[in-house]
Length: 79
Image (tube, rainbow, N blue to C red; front, side):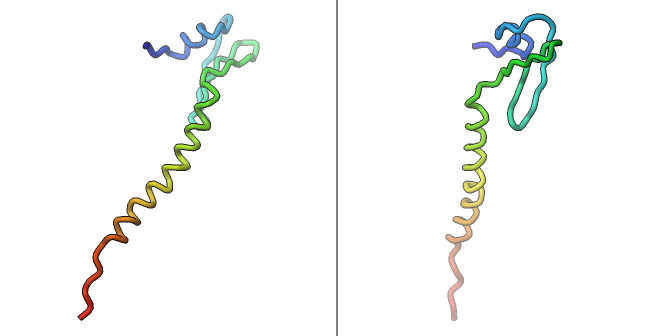
């Protein structure tokens, strides 16, 4: 499996002529935009929902770990 750069992906998607590659981080996007203003998305449609679900599950996981450690600490004996 080879990883293609966006210019190769634009050619593979059949984008005609000269194009500019635009990128966004969130939501994840890479588009080939031709001089006519026609854009072709290179990132599959399932990527952003998977990232959203992953980030949604990551936050509770990061919070629950330290909470579990704090709850398991032994309490000092009362004298």
